[in-house]
Image 1 (cartoon, rainbow, N blue to C red):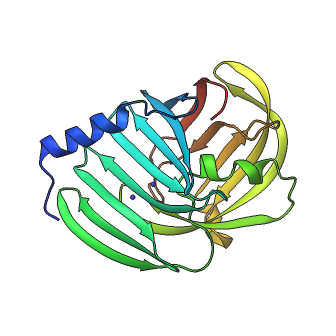
Image 2: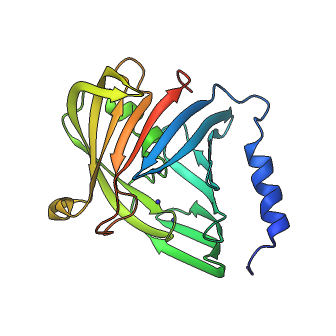
Length: 231
């Protein structure tokens, strides 16, 4: 869910991951998703904590990828941490006005970068941040930024509501609001993804996408809710 110092010691990273996996005091309901890419299946656990500053969305994937995303109450991302044990990647990203500062380790090598953006929001978890838009009834589009996590590269994306339809979620056909997310303009023919949300409360139900951009031949990833009701 959802894209991007010296190399940290394994013991430090392992300790961080174990703390992230704990169900923290005050956390709300936990949602469980199944991620299917080709023949590979993974379990994705998501929960959210609320405090006076906003919302902290935590995601733990069974293959060792983790997120902790700090959103404001409008669901714009203020900062996040990303960890991927297989790729030896661990870094933080924080919005600073119209820029995003990234620091940490990418594929075992230290990096630091300041990337310029504009006033449009950063949505590091479209699954969560687009929930309100999905059930808004809007006929317009919504432009936002996202960091592709495995590459730590920043892209502009655009979301458009495509109406309500029946979609399969964990073996059952349910009514859902469909949202298409793509690169802007003509580049949308290169990459796009589909998201479905529950019409009553906007809970994210399912997505179909190729993880990464421009990866020809990469199998489609399907993410669908299998346990839990809402955050």
